Image (tube, rainbow, N blue to C red):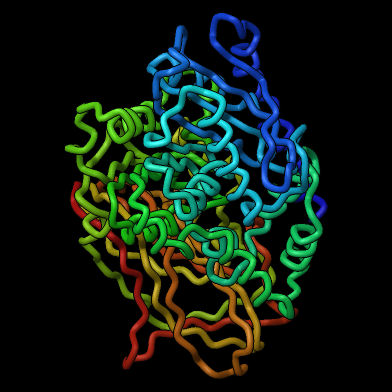
Length: 518
């Protein structure tokens, strides 16, 4: 735990410094850029530190479209200044504010709770009263925390007509507690950054403590807390309000994995767009925060231009699901998410394999932020030598060798039967692309935890791996590896536990991979 918290603090310092420096330079010439730094009274009178960027020579009587940008978790209020300037140059009023409890804003961290949603509406009120913004053309956008707050506000405030939610969450539970397994590094990173740059409230302190200490007696309370802060909980309201929703995320986001965004996207009924790219949490948007060319922000601007200004820029005629593979350049368009992984091909998990728990086999998902950032720019996913994996601690199954290049697109699924010697346990499944020399490159992974099982009694496990887009070269094969320890997650394997994976004839075990020839 100490190592993870050290990682969290270090990562927060690096991220805060890196993402703050370039936009800060934009703020130096406030007269020419039309930037004002203001205090806005949020819910209950709490002071929110904010900045307002207006188009040069804006007519105070004109109704201009408004964009509201809540800051990311632990980021200062200057985070979006580069993008705010670009938006203002194209005719928007832009108000960015430091979320409650962080940096100079007042209050305590509410983690996208009711006060945060009310704050966003108060910021809209202020902008309509103090700038030439038009109440009929209001949009919201943000990265990470700002994305979540934007989606939640769209559910509660019908004035929000368009949203660009980047590297955010739709389901907080499925993000950091998927497979009922605590995502250790993600939670420690968020917690450490919160303590470093803000003032966690008592509720957050209690939830974070219970989560990281595996206090299962409080599981129902933790889940209820997370549901209240999940946009998917308010899906009916979002659909009823009809805001145009653009969602963008990275395949390797270790804080808010892509599956929950894709599921949410499928349930939206209004105008919508889904974009997935290589990278980890917020890395796909990061260069745009420096004012550099960035596909994510370019499309977010196009989204607002079309839905708030009525610009015919063609974004509504493009395929609404846009994917960029981790292996190749360029984008692929699909009419919907289900079309992405329509071609499911199975390979069997034959035989019986027994593994000892509590030992890391060497297969793992890497380090939060770092590993998938390297994959984004260098295409270097975590690797293992599949033949050398210790079979006492890892179950291994392989597909046939593929004669032609294959494309993995979407969500791979594992179905197996598990028998444990203990009532609780954790397993982690990994899908690898294995070359002729046996070197496996990680395609996807996901954890699964169980409690209250009868020792010695088999039970079925169905597990979705985190969605991805990855190209498998000709002559390679796929391998499924299952072990019980991964530094990304908290594991619940009692000392001396063994897990047996079997494939009963009445219920065969398999991996289903969304695979098609390239």
